[in-house]
Length: 332
Image 1: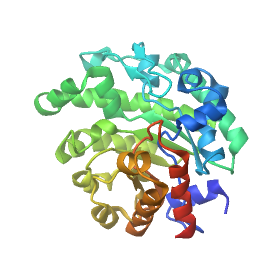
Image 2 (image 1 turned 135 degrees about the vertical axis):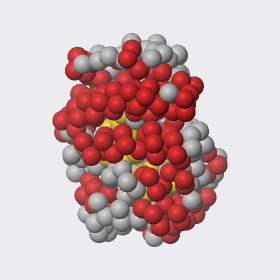
Image 3 (image 1 turned 90 degrees about the vertical axis):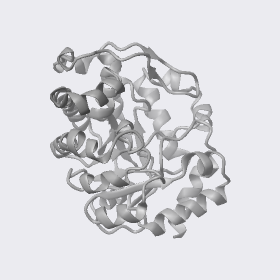
Image 4 (image 1 turned 180 degrees about the vertical axis):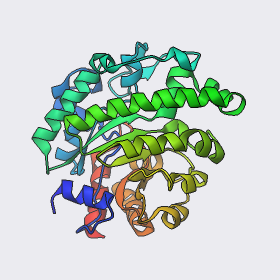
């Protein structure tokens, strides 16, 4: 079974010859950068380097996906945000939020020619041409709520969700339109699935009721607008979100070990594919290959449909630990 077929079949609850091992989240480490001869800093604005570095996780370690871009500032930068590009082993960050009121966010299709967006779209097209069938090309956007925290500030969104619901819904409606426009261009460029990063929707940050009332309707709109699989990643404990996630129509949910996997299995198995949840810090970063192998087997036995790290990999994760995930999938 080819890698692309295995990944897409697992996302759609179809039979596979074994569980796929994926990097839906950024999976580039220092060893890959050294092999390619450049770091993140040289790749963010160069489509060719972006593809080569993203593909290193597949070429060097055997992951069955190729994920790009690497960071979560592309949209904010295109809108005029000031970006700290980070270092050779850290990713870019937005320096400060841009707006204070929902109606300050204004955009049209010209946004697609701004900042790094053309670089990302060119890289997706090239990756699909070079790796079609060999690896699933996963593009990524920042989800509407998390994008909102970057553009308006987390404090504003939380206040609006409680005291001024008309503002949170006005903001989320505009943000979702932006997300659909950008994701649609990624699909047109050739991606096999879209990763929607929603770290700010974590149950560690917001109540399940806030997810239900202020975010879930927009996830449903966004995911159902895509003609390729939609994969939403939310960090932290999202156990309380799970009944509402089941109503969104998202193809898959990517989560980490803080979520009750038994509840995820009970509520979502066969409806929304489960992706995860190998511990990123204690196991993949600080553990040994045998620790990764053991944790990967536990994830497989718990019922995940696709094996993946619980969050984006720190740059110093050893390649041997990434390959231990693949060994566990092949042998189990």
